[in-house]
Image 1: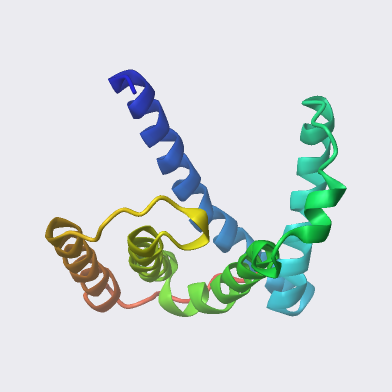
Image 2: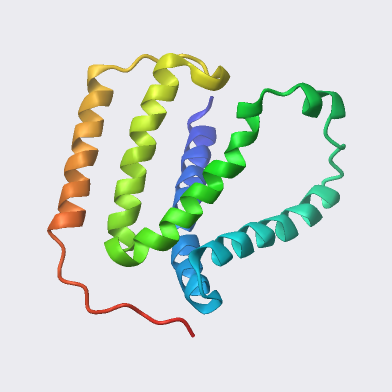
Amino acid sequence: MSTLHWAGLVVLAMIAGAVVPFQSAINVNLGRGLGHPLWATLASLLVSVIVLLPIIVALRLPLPSLAFIGKAPLWMWAGGAFGVCFISLALVLLPRLGAAGFMALALAGQVVASLLLDHFGWFGLVERQVTLPKVFGVVLLMGGVVLIQFFDAPAKGLATAG
């Protein structure tokens, strides 16, 4: 993989991460306006479908294999449930922990879980051994989480929807 290709992938991954706190903050206000975080979760996922369907049509993607749908293991369908879990917990926790605090904790959880997924090759992933430098990286990340979460200026108040 060329350096330019790798750099492009890094930038795209950072953009993917950067949109998450915006999504969460927007959904918090949507939840307040709709009266409950779960309504905002549903609305967010419905908007996802509305945005995604025209893209699928524009790309002229073939329909999924019905044979695969019928024989796929149940765990392959859990991604949607994990999405609901993340969006719903973000709606509840972000106002209490702050955007930076919530995202730092969420990122720490993602990195630890990712190391486990890689190390054991779960869900068909290529096995990538957990090494001492990776563990040290997690320790540094946890230190950053502590700094972000516990050495913050006091909150000035919650914004209201509207």
